[in-house]
Image 1 (tube, one colour):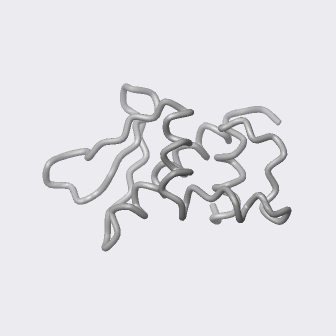
Image 2 (image 1 turned 120 degrees about the vertical axis):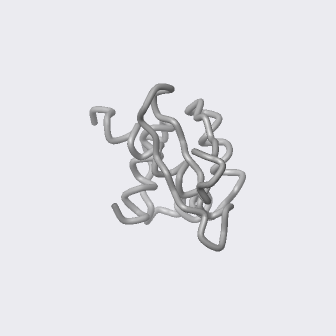
Length: 99
């Protein structure tokens, strides 16, 4: 998914039914770049954020508290990786919601 598609699906999961990246909302709500937006999204969707293993250099977001999770490697920016993992997990939730 593109960043725009991720944000649209994440917004749907969060209940932002009038989210359109071109209408100005995109500039004010962007959990891919804003720590606060990402944290609020994670809290709203009751996400569990963790490191999958002690040897793995990444972050995981559990989707169903059992086995399904979104994993994102840290690379050089663990904050960006965490934000992206949150948005990816929210997008998965948003994709499962009927229009």
